[in-house]
Amino acid sequence: MPKPKVKTPAPAKRAPPPPPEDDPNAGSKLPSVSVIDDQDAMDACVEMLQEAEDLKRRSEDDLARLKEIRTELSVYSEAYDLPGMRWGKIGLIYNGMRKKLTLDKAKLLENGVTAEQIGMSYKESDEFVDARFVNLK
Image (cartoon, rainbow, N blue to C red; front, side, top):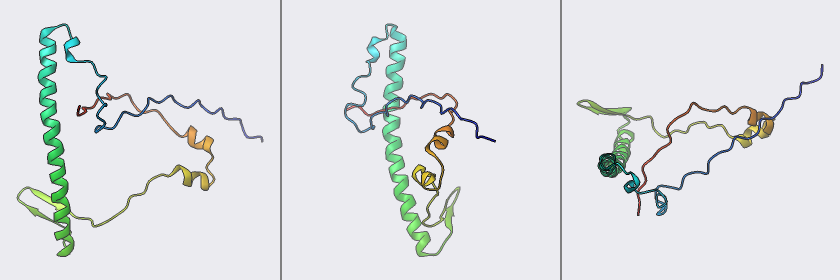
């Protein structure tokens, strides 16, 4: 029996990737909140953006320090051959150095999966809000 012809779907149009957050021009083309002609709405937006700026900065600082602490505690866990440690209501589970498996399109092609099959294996996600805060220079 002949193999049925499968029509390859057209590749989905993707938006260009957003500029990196540290790009000084990342938000330069955003409109100012002053374009909002309702004063109460504009004031609310200004207030929320000011709060978001502070929260984002604090969050970045907190995450950087948390990463430092995790690294330092991991050194102690390794040195004392511990699976982790706890104190009060916080603990660190230490799994050592490890790697994770990722799916590699090049390896799929090497192993006989065709580019067409790879293309047909994508599915569209559910809709989601795509919004992020950027640091403006």
